[in-house]
Image (cartoon, rainbow, N blue to C red; front, side):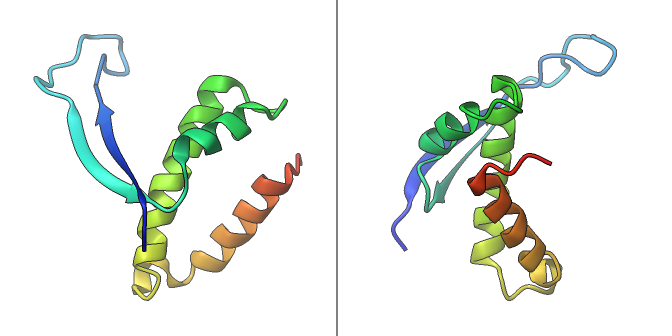
Length: 98
């Protein structure tokens, strides 16, 4: 399957108490996704019920998780979750606000 290619970088800035990070390097990896994650973020940021920071985190997290789940759909770990994830994504795409 053709995929958009991404380099993901996560920097730990501080712990839960506000102390500076003790990690010397960011976590970085390359991955692919069937969707344009930047376009997904842009669409999700247009929702009035989710702030921009949350929309960005949600979109990136869902797209990374969803792609792994799709690529491993036969794995028992994902078998029970896949139908529910699909329903959640349909509601999210429709703009359903509960």
